[in-house]
Length: 306
Image 1 (cartoon, rainbow, N blue to C red):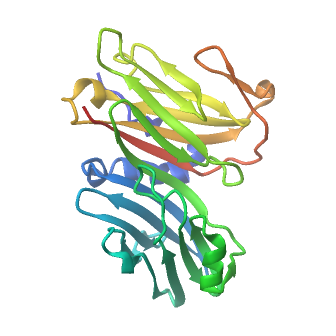
Image 2: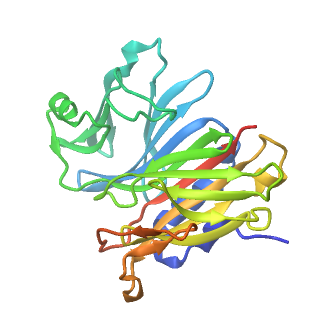
């Protein structure tokens, strides 16, 4: 029996970000490189022109680095790429700057990662900045050292904010896989945890939690290893798709589960009660509303280590 790829379940309503995410999922190099990695794709505006910026934080036994790739959003051609080493003994490389020309536009990259703090992920969780400057504007700013970034660059905030299209993360664990993501840039970041029990006397099962609340509970996982479900988060519909075939039917440590989180349009009138049933019968109450369909898509690759 054949099963469709999880991303095929998306409707036509979000083609742009879905197409990008689908391309990443189907990339053989992505699936066959089991290293700790967080990749984000932003669309920025430089000199009134759009440019895609791929930001990848990568870590394995030998290397820890930040990679920036600047692409033409239409043709996909690479304008420029930059690699910053984050190895502990290369302290001098953790603060610096680089400049390049992009279609006749001067672009500066500034970074300070000397005090960056990490919490299990190759991406820092605090005490750093990475800033892209074009025409006197900070067109993309990563990290929480925002004041230091503006002081260093002597640039003003951009008139047009960058758009985050997707975040893709490889997570390695035995039973619990966690990540963080914003489904709306105007709102707070959410804690997302996938937990599983695929061995032992009981039937395999899986739980997906957002901000500590179980929003999806899958029993009999051996029969429901692929599926999708929509949950309500702050009056925003988020479709969750999963494919954990490799967890159950591949040799231990040889496969990974794929999870996709995609925001949808605002609720209909039928959903105005502002809450969602969870697997344990509790309610996940909403507090704010959303007025547009975000383009963002989160992809989580959960590598089960036995």
